Amino acid sequence: MKNRVYIASDHAGFELKEEILKVNKDLLLDLGTKNKDRVDYPDFALTLVENIKKDVESKGILICGTGNGMAIAANRHKNIRAGLVFNAEITKLIRQHNDANVLVLPGRFIDVQEALKCVDIFLSTNFEAGRHKKRVDMISER
Ligand code: RB5
Image 1 (cartoon, protein in one colour):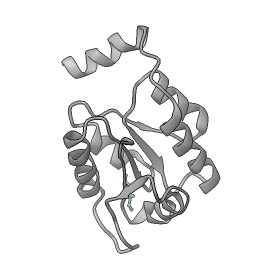
Image 2 (image 1 turned 90 degrees about the vertical axis):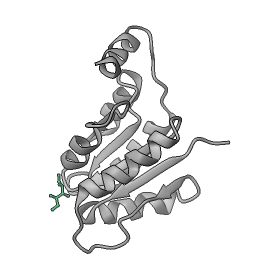
Image 3 (image 1 turned 30 degrees about the horizontal axis):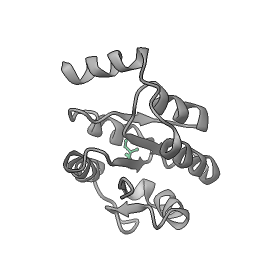
């Protein structure tokens, strides 16, 4: 079975979330928000993190206006490594070096085409392990 990929956003990330869902609808599990009404990003970060904790091989995509609120909220949780990215190159590195299991996108500061590239790269790039494994382990051990 394919590993699950959850996606969630607040109102500021809603439009980008819908664009990402259009091209990845069979792959992604949408945890909301469901429209542009104002909501609180910590609620959506928590829902996504709780799903990943129950399903440790899964990954997540979070979107808010700057990406920072979602990243801050998600990274409070043990074994969640959420990487905020602005382009494809950084996306590759958060997988190769940081083994990020959550991709965070800044909905108000990235165009749809770049964001779609980031999603593809996030889902298809492996962790390099090697010298990076020790560092990632140091995070979860503390
Ligand atoms: C919502 O206006 C905005 O504050 C939120 O989407 C996000 O950017 C927070 O970090």
